[in-house]
Length: 493
Image (cartoon, rainbow, N blue to C red; front, side):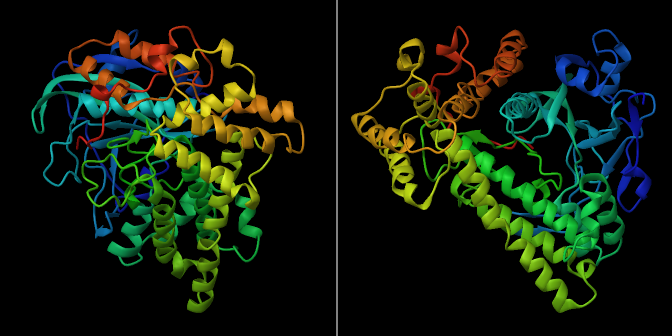
């Protein structure tokens, strides 16, 4: 199969999307190009070698075989239902189908106003584009399901927010952009119109068709709900053990394919804070780090409510089936979280008897405000007898309380069942050396605004192998100095 564009979602009709003509910009310039992702997609050429690609990724002209649209959806934003949102500053060029048949949305974010812009300019400042490019690619390297970045293009035009900023467009790649909010729009705003067609489409695109023959989850809607339940549980568990705080987990930012999307006010913890919250618009901490698992459970319940009429004709059976699926989420989240946590601690598993040990570790991190990422990496170096050969002692000071705790931890590790060497070695693949720290992301934004890209390219290259030590990592892996700390992040809408 030759890679190229297809338009299965646009083919669903005008109820689902609106045709969107390109909105030209004056002076497009390529900032960043993801050659590795382009190669994986089977994308031919680059914006450097093919000027028409640069023009297309800036919205100045269509690529061959594209059919640009803006999609409609709704969503709960901070708990309040908005009956129509949609792609207010994004244009879906189409679905790129690879040689192996894998399907990915190719979307321009910040490409100008659409039918769903609600009076906005549809543009993006360069800062949010750089943030999403850097963090989404780092998340991919960390093994977290995520949307990705193919290109960042400067528009040559200013964007006015709280100040005048240079504009840019991100080319985002996703398994799809279909959201809980997409289902909400048809189920709640349109009173159920076209929900069945949407569900059939999502199941065909993202779910195992064999599940349709299983009971009790025999309906397409039940299969979808159960699939999303598993994906949400696994995704959020991974966020939690990495100290990642999404910042705006509205239902319109919950993708049915289970990928992380919308890196506006996101942040990674530096020092461990059990109540970490960075988003400037999350004044009540609704989406703080400890609340993320529960919020995604809530988002799942909203999806279940929308799907009830399709799960079963009998209301009682539909409610019972949906409730059973939604109730699987806590156990699934717990299983994934404990799996990741055991791997990070170098344990064969985390049992009920390990509760005091695990809590003690987190209590020390909180009391001494220890760096979350470096503390877990310290465990890795200790377990692998690599501390004398590692740069970590120059980056991480170990308090007496942690050294004392480690005595009990090592004793517990000696009771591991299974291959101790493999369990210990695996710590190197789950406890990163580098993450996209907030001060590094901010420096990347500052550099981009000043027209400097080389340092950002170096940052991106370093982020491709986050679990290995490299020369020069004292700068990339260190925690921020007090004056560098980023405590508030912004959407950039």
